Amino acid sequence: MRATFLITTLLVGKVTFGQPATRPKALVYRGPAACDGCPEAVAALLKSSPSNFDVKFAGPQEEVDITATSLGGVQLYAQPGGGDLDPAWVGTKKYKNILRDFVARGGRYAGFCLGAFLAGSGPGFELLPLGSDTDEEITQPKAQVTNDSDTVIQVDWHFQTGSRKGHRQNGRWLYFQDGAVMKLARNTSAIVLGTYSSNGDVAASITPLGKGWVGLVGPHPEADESWCKSCLAPLSVHPEIQEYFFTF
Image (cartoon, rainbow, N blue to C red; front, side):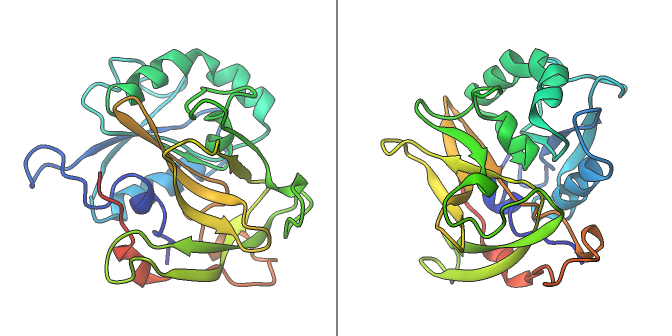
């Protein structure tokens, strides 16, 4: 089974694009800045979500690159996990203004792990509100994980809609490898979807940019058990989180 609990929460859920029968479209980065299998895992998550996304890959080695033209008519752009930030930035910085304009005009950006780091400003696409940024969770006080090994980490989920609205589910295990923490300015209209169980740091959030939204997650909700066969704790796969959608 594949964990589907975050991408629908972050950006898609019960959003209606055009006529009810119309499948929303998503563009997923695939290229040197992404880890092996990460774009495909994100694409599978989008396709299996209640919104049933029509997904295409884009990148420097794909049939289409990430341009204003390729993003035209697309509702969501996803940046999957990858390697280190600095080399990834070298290969993706050319997309900065294109992605900022896409979101500001009403698009959705979904960033997983490295994709969350890239949404920040050190360096990054600068998609977060003024005074907000991303950082390494492993360097934060009372972090549950303090090294960059492949492992799992516990996250508390904060339900926003559905029959569990206002409830929390604590201590859910997610695949984690040097994931991001979102450091959000106090005066932002951010929506916190998940916090790291050990210290309350923001593990998943939604923030506005212009007419659009930026959804970020530090761990990997798209991962299944095959990602970390040596991990001691099992990854959480919970169908009930399907109702944990956020409507824009």
